[in-house]
Image (tube, rainbow, N blue to C red; front, side, top):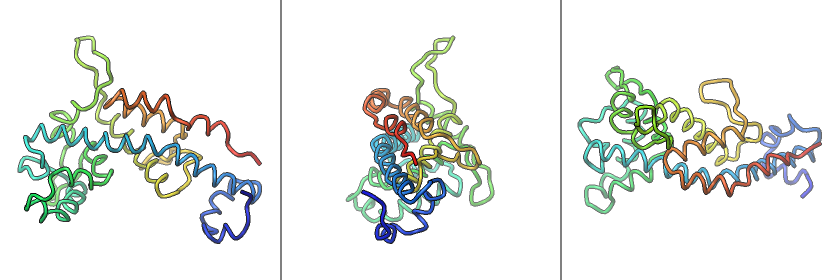
Length: 240
């Protein structure tokens, strides 16, 4: 499909302008726009499995640690303001049906945003009373780390596990990729690291996301490694 201005009216000039800035002509800008759509489509299968696996991994570890499927209701759980607000919004939405038994904890898990799970892997922040909440000590070491394995053993014979920061960095970068792809934003030039001016090439973001999935489910990671179309697409960037 060649470029025409009627199409531009449909998708908007500002959106197409993002691609015009790096194109030699309108035809080239349109080709880059369509290529970006193909890249987003190639990302979707991994994004779906990784998001679901990440939330289930964190949920299962926290449910085991706090001894209840609705771990967010445990009096022992300490959350910072940001995480608490995101979880409270979901719980409040379904509270009546949860109380009646119509919905179980799984509904809260399914409806919680990817941001909730990424925040739980972070360092933690401030509580409503200004107290510092340390997720490394309170969540990662006693619970969450057991959901991630590098598939190796240390010199002492222990199972090799990634550090919390390694997991969080990959999860945050994946969240940025997933959000941009879902909202039809450009991903063709890579993904900017959250809180930084550094841009990571799309193939590197893919590999880091795949590694994160591998730490939770090697079988799923291997499935995506063997079936992805992303690298073939990256080799065929539209030229002027």
